[in-house]
Length: 314
Image (cartoon, rainbow, N blue to C red):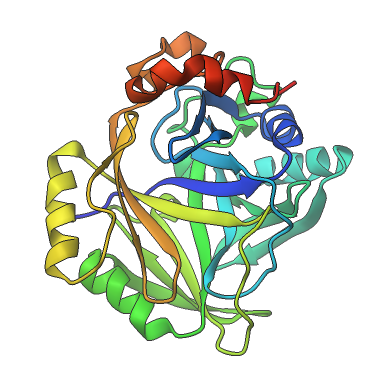
């Protein structure tokens, strides 16, 4: 069995209105699902993605009233967004600065050109030049970003752990990822790259071993979990594999738009395996994704109560 890449990444915001404005208005992503946290229906769960809501393109947010994240190890430290060219990086640098975002100049990381920046809450993000993705995306027609510069999808995702060995064991032995290469980082030492499926930035984890860094405390501007792609056909096999390998997990969880398995790797980072199917069009037409509050069938009887507890996005 092979995971095919990054499915989605879920982060935390304490200001959902500003979050919505930044990810749609500045980054030009499409809000493809306006729903709630199925385990805490008082909180929005927003999904931003490409024009079709394709697997591997969505960054999602829980709206929780938490203080800012304390940065550190045992955590996802940065999320990559793929764009089609180095010319797009230059375009984005100008746009982000014009919009007042904390943005650095173009640099090289792990053999690729990148632009690092932060959202208004300090969520650490990177734009990554990935010419191989230039024809693979699904631009959103109503995005404020021209189609040739739109974000194509997620990847790579960057992690920090105090001890590499236990995490590497899970990535390579349990999840069948490949140890692809390593590179030196000026501020984080050696970074180890693990890849899934066909490889490339859409299917990479970059893991830094930082034994002298204090543990992170999760909060606004931080990441809750990262999810990896599988299919409905292999989903049950992954559930069986985690059990056979002695990895405690949630067991199968039906999120309606995809099916999930949750577990923590030994350094405490929450992983998810999620299916590509059925997708966000399961309860909304593709041309109207994200325009209304969508609830899975088991929450539909609570719609009036749930809607009353949510604040407007604009």
